[in-house]
Image (tube, rainbow over all chains, first blue to last red; front, side):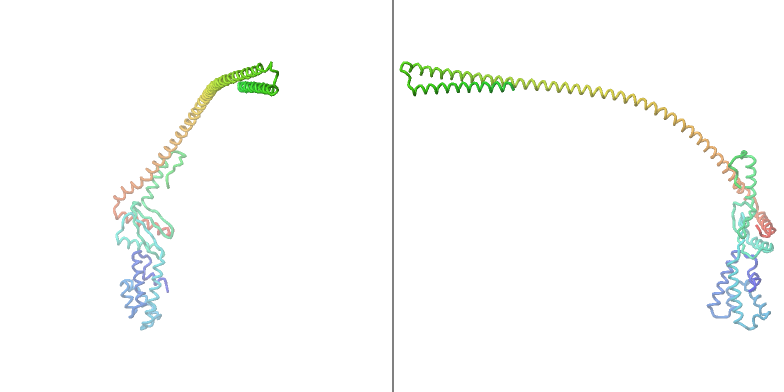
Length: 180
Length: 198
């Protein structure tokens, strides 16, 4: 299974809520494929959103073209579908999370824009989580793979105040130095 | 004791007189058994009767004397005992008075000594308390001063810490949403420029 196939279905950067929704759909599809009778393609189409189903169909079509699946091989199609869905499930469950903290709740389309911007920035496949913390005033705090980049206005203000305090308030040699 | 001996002696004397009288009576009876000459017969009997009577009188006299002596002895003994009892009572009273005086004197002496010692100790304790009090006051002054210093520093720090929050709230309301989004995009741009090595 090529990872490019999976990223083609889910996208390189997927919003956390979308990832959870897709994971639920994949799990439903797999469950119906195992239990319900009928054509595999119909079952998957019923479980998945049209967008994701179309991407899956693209991959299956490519494999038919490359001869991996016979033109009329229903059994082989069901097998490839199950394989893809399993891989997609595993991928979604193990994706790392990029957390972006903002001062105000974002507009929905802005989150999409951010996901595209992050994707364009060459990041590894990930889930994008947006959180809100009004105390950061403005800007963003970005957390990725155990590291944090604080580019908030609060941090700038605190640094400025600490600098002023050290310069004006604290007498020379005072132990009560300002917090960093 | 001597009175008892005297009474015993008088009784013995009366007994002796009685024995002598009996002896004389016996001699008289022997003489009647061997009849004397007729010339002396009436005179001897008369003598014997006279002797017996005299002995009787003498014995009665002695018994009366013994009674008298006994009564006197009893009275003397009573007086003596009363005198001794009174003497002993007086002696005991005097002794008791002496002991009371001695005890009172001893108590007064001890009391004076203890009072003196107590006064001495009280003065020493007052001095010690003054010294401790002064030391404690100095320590407390230092502690209060240090506490004030700490509190002032803490308050200064709290003011400094709260400043960003106050500024944040004031500034946060005045920043439009578009500006927020722009700042977030810029932050992400900086992160991507660093190759996501935050």
